[in-house]
Image (cartoon, rainbow, N blue to C red):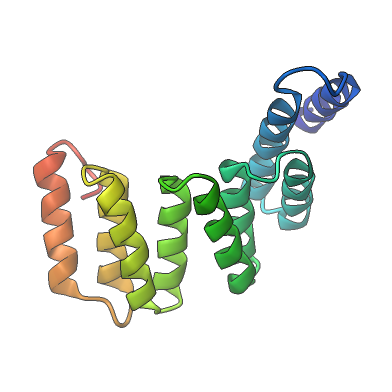
Length: 168
């Protein structure tokens, strides 16, 4: 039933005149939401196809670019993912979801020098973000070339800044 609703929404938006302000943005958002649902259901092929459709109408959408990057990571296409994350950041220099996803991917690949640079960039933009602090700390704690002492520092900073944060 959800797919039918998404399909009807896409058809309705596609029928609107090109002159309707925000049409492409709305269509990209709808396709991104649908792609997210398919990604969560583990249908990576459909999810990526929907991202591609969304990028056809809104090629600089950082949400879609980041989602496509995450799907590429799951598909083992790390270079494609890296390029997508970089495009998302080029579209919005401080787009935390792209920075976080890119840093996590690099850490999973045990490329901690790159991961640290990406996390540092995110941290400079949002030094109080518990999500960035947690992601960076987790990367340091779990990557083979991670730094456990640094992980402890980052978790401690997260708790100091966000005392009610259960994850840290």
